[in-house]
Structure formats: structure tokens, C-alpha cells
Length: 205
Image (cartoon, one colour):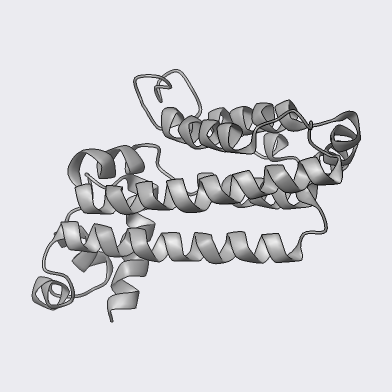
């Protein structure tokens, strides 16, 4: 029952934002009484934390699968870009901002994921790419990985990229593409463009 509640709540939060979705709305979507819902989760804050943990768990599994299946750093980072493209197609830009403002425990969980998983995978990918000759050898993996993590956070700030002026998905994908091109050697750029032409995140709106 809890897994079903988490799945439905996550879908609502991602599509419509977190603040706008009440426990009443979750219960109605599930065709469930509020009493039953509150037996699963004591309050909305607990539910938001549970959905964040579930989402992060899937992301970590996906990162691991892509790393293990990729033949090189370019294939790996292209796979990660595809995951990002898919997730952004389902995400309301306000969702993460709502969590930051109103659900501190879930936000701390996200920050931990961002620092340990996203930054860690990015740094490992950069080291791999440098060793394979696809990324520039003078790049400091830790500095660039930290930069990438902060880019992700920055793009969720409505004061920087407001929904009235920017398409959220295209902002994320344009910045990611810019970041990747800053890493590449000529050899890496040639291989990346092969993947890019076959399945370009920037061309999929």
C-alpha cells in the first residue's frame, strides 16, 4: 500500500508541483479514504520525504547500470543525459523549489544525493574520460564535478531562470550540452557528436 501511495504522490508532485498537492488530492487520486492515507503516512512532509527517497533510489540504480554498461566515458555521459532528458519531460520546475522551501528533511536527502551521487559520478566520469583521451587532460575532476552540481541547483532557481522567460527543460539541456563540450578533446568531440546526432537531447522537445 505504501509503495502505491508513493508512486501516485510522486507522479502528482513531479507534474503539478509539491506545494499545490494536498493529502486530500493524493487520497482522491488513489480512491482512498484520508484515514487510510494517514495510516500510511502521518503527514505530507513524511510523504514528500518518502517519495524523494524512492526517486533517488531509482536514480542511483540507473547511474550504476549506465556506468557498468558503458564502453567509455562519452557513452556514459550521453546515457546520463538521456536520463536527465526523460526526467525533465515529467518534472514541474517548481517541485524542487517547493521541497527546498517547505520540506527540509526531503531537501537534505536531495542535497546528500547531489553531493555524493551526482558529484561522485561526474568526477569519476571525468577521470575516466581523461584517461581515455576523450576529455582534456588539464581538467580538475573535483572542481568540474562541483561546478556541475551547482549548475543543477542554479537552474532550479526561479529568480535566475523564471518560467515566464525560459523553457525549463531547454535551459537544463542547453547548460548540460555546454558543460560537456567544455570537457572534450577533438577525439572526444568527434565521438560525442556521433551519439548526439543519433539521439540528441537538444532536439527532443
